[in-house]
Length: 114
Length: 112
Image (cartoon, rainbow over all chains, first blue to last red; front, side, top):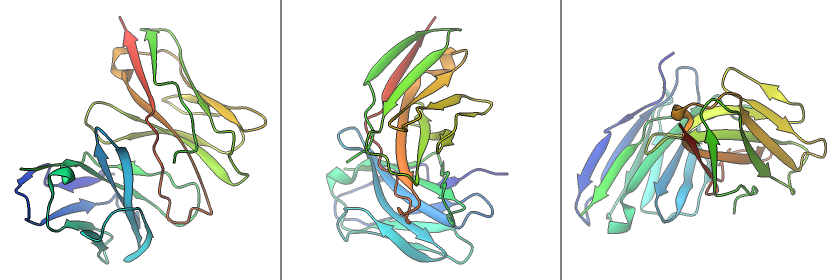
């Protein structure tokens, strides 16, 4: 089975712009979670989608949003970018229906905001 | 906040077993223990998980104490490629949205 894929792998944006990141889960997985990783804060949960519905959300401002499509692919969007949004953005997929929730992570998108 | 406590760093000689401890004293009955590792700037890699019983797969073994308040991940024959940050995570069925809370983890250095 192919793993979780994320596009693009690297991105450079300027402050004030908006960005959309994409995640394709493992085939058959219906849950996609997004995480932000920075040197200062470590890995932090953003939100999780299951069957096109946001099921859980972390403590991030409304500038961070996401969605999931009927084929389970997911996108996250960050509007009005700030310098502090520079991070590695990771998505993870899982079957998502019952515990245990083994999550499989993609390689991440490295976002740099200048 | 993370529900787990891990030592910030450990060293292990190549070829020897690496034993990584994790404390999770507030774990509840339906919570699983998951282990992941992250090699520099890559996505975290799933290693193993367990509920009550000890578990083993091709990568590692997971030993969970009888009271479930702590666990140990064992890499039986560590290689240089096992150098990574190892995360121990506790998460359960009532965490419906499966938001894993990652702590700082243990930085394992495998030395030649």
